Length: 240
Image (cartoon, rainbow, N blue to C red):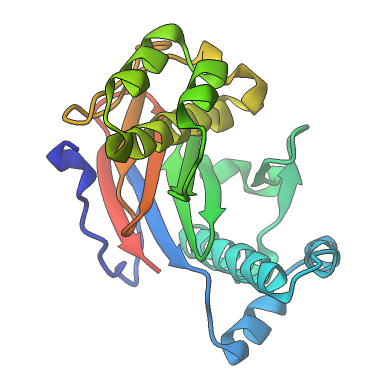
């Protein structure tokens, strides 16, 4: 992949500022020690705690608490408030956005998680969507690509040797999902979002030239992508 995918994940400064031409990406490890999980849980709202308790597996419950508690912690740093003071409202498809109380901040964010990793994108005054996928083994990559991808994308997947097919499939998938999350529509429209990429070339969003698409390599065997309205943004990558 292009060199722009190999971003350094740095420790964020204490006084965090987000300029209008910047986008910040946070890499979050969701496996946290029990005392930290307990502290994070105290920052959640009652509806978030109820949602956490609905998970059947303890591991999924813990990942949700870590993801939502750390999201609150991160957003609180930008807003200058305690994590428990952050309030969300939800779009029709369940995407959390900051409540109107914080409309003055012009902050937009999006969170995605897969296995034990999450990515959070934060920007100012711009729609943003992010996706992370653990590249699990997929038995029918070509069939999935034919079903969900545009004809030219399917042709690229088909043309590759099996060991490259999986990575390219997941790169397409994360890019499409990041854009669909940014514009607030569901995965039903996967095949309508056209991406241009190859094993050597970074992804470009063909569907809408006004948007930037940036691929990320969060960890071994993971791929990520972020879609943001506008061009020429400076990217900063933080490790939580």
